[in-house]
Each structure stands twice: as structure tokens, then as C-alpha cells.
Length: 398
Image 1 (tube, rainbow, N blue to C red):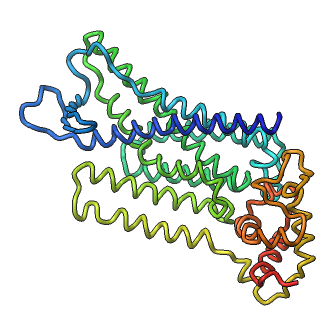
Image 2 (cartoon, one colour; image 1 turned 90 degrees about the vertical axis):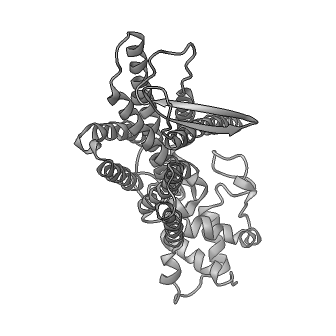
Image 3 (cartoon, rainbow, N blue to C red; image 1 turned 180 degrees about the vertical axis):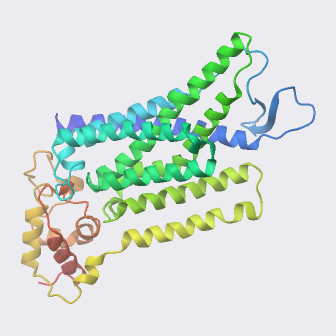
């Protein structure tokens, strides 16, 4: 595939993914807020669970919620489902065009596990399906009857997946597949549970029957899961821009911290929207801030900086040789890697002056982050990364 054409496909899909994702997240957050904001008031119609008054755009809105369904159906009923479907479709298309089409660069890291392109793709696809199946089984089991136990089980499932992904794929590939698995669970919740249950309720009403209240409770449970998973999955999906997240030796633990921090932030808003005040909402955001500080310190720690502190610093020529051997296949005025027509981001390492000018990028991406070279295609060793890091920190001596 022509590189420029592939870039345009990637851009179009990414924009479509953002558009549909924003629409899905917006409607999801709105309805969870609405559900938590409902209040019982005197004079409500029979069967109404609660009502909410809102003001927006110069007008007032009055919304009622029936716990099961109203006694009769309106002429027009609005459904919210295509936002979720197209978010998943565009996201999956991005996964294919970027991570599966260029698996050698973005998905496979021989230093983690030597995989063929087909093996890596099959593992990725299988994990998305398996994640949903296991999650669905847990929700329908006895564990699913307890909110606390179910939350712990879901956390363990995602952590187990993160651990396995980080021992199979590159750091980038692992994080994006954690996000893709969670996103698949969320979209499947809409496609397999929430919308079908709502359709059954509507069908019962149309047939003059009383709908099963369990259908609504099950749909609400899955919708709540989606709400709490949204903030973590958003960060997972942009993690490929931040090597300090996915390149850590124990990056699966970073996944756990992201889940906890995102969940705490979401819980703060949900508790406040439900009317919580004082102690009920005083602890979530401070706890999330502490978690973020722990995440930053854990992800930024570089053991090589300590390990090599007393060793001799390599020469500038040695550093040049390492960079030109491991990095200049892509970062050159004339890249030898067929996947690039020009140096990524315009960064070139054809001489020592260019390396010195981009030393902090080398330190962040190749030494601390270990995100470069892509998929470690040139087999840069840990020793070489440590030597480069020590040379840069020492002021790049001759």
C-alpha cells in the first residue's frame, strides 16, 4: 500500500473514530447523569420512577423515567445505539490498518516474543472475542449479582489481559489491545444486551404484555460498566503517543493504576450527580490525584540511570555508531526502511550534530521509553540504550 494513501486512510478513520466516539461518550455520560439526577416528587404519574428538570440553550426540559416502560408507546421513540456501533467499527478499522497491516513495526517485538505476522493478528483478534465472552459469563454468573464482586472480577480480567498482552506484543501493541478489548466489551454490551433488552420491552408493550423488569436492570448494569470504563479506555487509546506508559517493564501494573484513577474520577461525578455531598464526595478526587502521582513516579523511574552511574561514559563516536546502526534506517535524509519515504517527524541522525540537537528525544524515546526503534526492528540492546542514556546525561562528551 502506498505510504501516503495509508496515511490518508489512517487520518480519515481516526477522525471518524473521534466523531463517533465523542457522540457515544456524550450520550452515555448524559444518560448516566440523568439517571442519577432523577428525583421523586409528589404528583408524578403512576409508574414513573423519577423526574428531572433541566435548562439549556434558552429552554427548559422536563424528563420522566419509567422503571419498566410507560403504559403506552409514543409515536416517535429515539434510540441511542449507532454511536456505539460506529465507534467500534472505526476503531477496529484503525487497529487493522495501523497495527495489523504494519504488525512488524507496531505489534511485534522480537525481544518480547518472536511472532509471525499472522500469529500476532490471530492472537489479537482472538483476545477481543475472548475478552467479551469471559466478561459476559462473569456478569451472568452468581458473581454478577454482587456489584462489589463483579467490579473486582472485571478488574482482575483486565489486569490478566494486560499481563498477557505485555508478554506477547510490543508495548504499543499491548496497550492498544487492552483498550481495544475494553472497547469491544463496551460496544458488545450495547449490541448484545442493552439494545436487545430494550427491544424486548418495546415488543412486550406493543403486545399488551407487562415487560420483565429484569431486562431493564440488566441493561442498566452493563450501561454502568460502560460509564466507569470510559475514562480508562480513552487513555489506553492515546497511550501510543506516550512511551512512558507502555514501555515500562511492568506496564501491566500501569494499566491497573489507570483503571483505578479513571474509576475514581468517574465515581466522583456519579456520586455528586446522585446528590452526594460532604464526605461522600470528598475523597475521590484527592485519591485520584495521589494515584496519578504514584503513576508518574512509577512510570518515570529509570533503573539504568542508577545501574550505570559509576561506569565509564562512551565516546561521541561510539554514540554515533549506535544511533546510526539502530535508528538511522528510518531517521535519515534517505531512510533505508521501505516503510518510510522521509524521516519520521523530520528527525534525522545522519551526523553527530543532529544527534546532539535531538538528544532529549533519543533519551525519552529510545532510552527511558524504549519505544524506538519501532518494534525494535534493528534489535537495539539494553546495553546500547543504557550507554546512550549515560552519554546524554553526562553532557555528550567527545
